[in-house]
Image 1 (cartoon, one colour):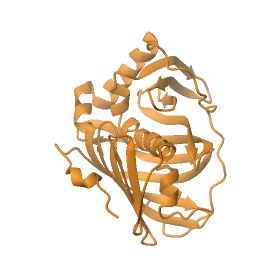
Image 2: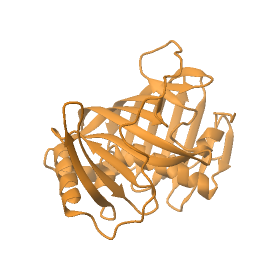
Image 3: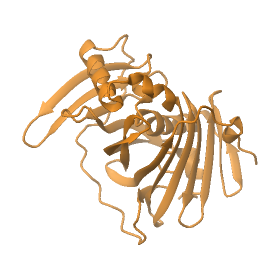
Image 4: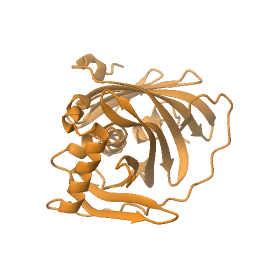
Length: 276
């Protein structure tokens, strides 16, 4: 098994060791795999344009999250976010803090602090290259590792804060709404150049984003990745999910509670540097 200090970072941000929920001090057994409501989001060609119905629905969702002020998403393009939770790993479960500094569209510095005192720090820079580090171990990312890292960071930091849904290059298709006794949801598929297709699920009553599914990779193995989002709260005028349950192939590996979202005017460029 890979050393989860830094090597798991090379495999992607999604696990960074592998995660779970604030306030629980005891170790708990790994949760059983949960059935997914959605199939794997298969690879598909980038659509030439969005379906009008899908694009119109996404605008309604953005209006819901911003209370009719979509321009408020602009300030989230420079953000600092702190989440606390628990990681579920084969070595045991432990409390963790995930602190992120991000500048749109693909500059990230992500710091994990774990209960055992471990740290993992990563930076991805605009030149489609990056470095990872933790416990004094700093190395360059290969391109395939960068793609894994970037997809997970993009979903966790830009999709969940809605910024990515306002991106002009993104295409939305296959708008569906299902309302029944046992299921009520709206969904669209989203395509962005250089990223895996996403299946986005919303609450049809509020139009809030509740779930993101995509086919990612972890240690070069195809994996189904899902984020279950809930409990929207007002962060600087935008209603964002304040809870995030991360699933890998249907099993919970991370559970987060968002404690803070700041939108500074700028972030010091040195924040995105990693030195050996």
